[in-house]
Length: 388
Ligand code: PLP
Image (tube, rainbow, N blue to C red; front, top):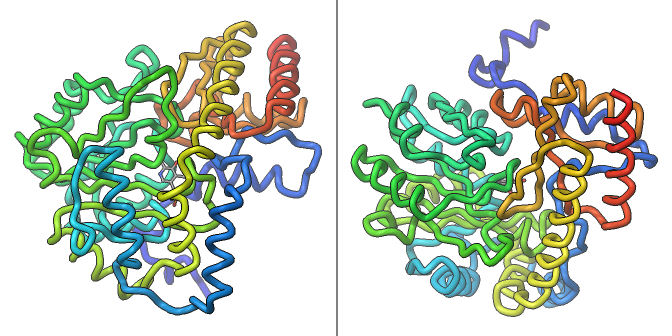
């Protein structure tokens, strides 16, 4: 059978994730040090795992409300109010999702009509453009540059806004660059969103992981923004809970209602044991999270220093757990560099081009990897670069 004709055209048009392609090469090789997948090297703190175990032990193996357990939504609302300074009604304005991944997908599907434009800043997380296309939208990337600290500048945003623009997607701190937006830029972006009547999807999954005393400001907390913003957050990164597959969206009730329709028919609800673990994370997970953050901070400082010593210019990212050194000096493309490094030194890092064309010339290195491995990886990178 000719399956090409059987696959929906918009799905066939989506390329496979550059990260996955690269990591298929690495799979099954235990000699490789991976600075690749954006996943904490910490196991989920024990008290959080225990909450999931208790949940099973008590026989809590059922569906929950489509919106998620009310007790979890109350904890989320309290946490978001304290951390982001925005108040959401747990009964109507919070939806528990299967990771931020699901929140992104259903938000786009709930809001977009075919052909409407979604603007996002690039380099960006690999799912943004495909998620927009899968929701029948048109993906419009605004390139950001190293010189601007990979932050979205309001002037650059304004240039791409058209009458078809419906949604603006933001991600600060950013995967893959670790960039954070200045308050001034965020205010400028908010003004444009209001002026052009855009809905803002803000993916704040790395918001706890900021360094050097940088305060996190959510665009949802700026004047006039709560009513047009979907704030998305989750447990994967700061609480080291990737496998629990849990996230949430906070937004005005009509938007949550529309997202919930898709969620209830496609997902029904998030797993109950993960939801119980998430309550424990929010209520008592602060100290362990700060301990992990402190460790990431030290690793970031080490990597930035070593890349600059090697001669690969590396800006100091304000957040997340990635560095994004500039490898253009070597004359190699980011894919050639990453493949060469893997072959010669068995170190895996992701070519910047996997995060959009503006990532070309850079390498994403995730430092959610033990310090010993980071030391070895940097020695290998130094040797590799010296031979070019
Ligand atoms: N958003 C960003 C920016 C990410 O980097 C990731 C994962 O790497 C996700 C969303 C997916 O998160 P989740 O595990 O909550 O689905």
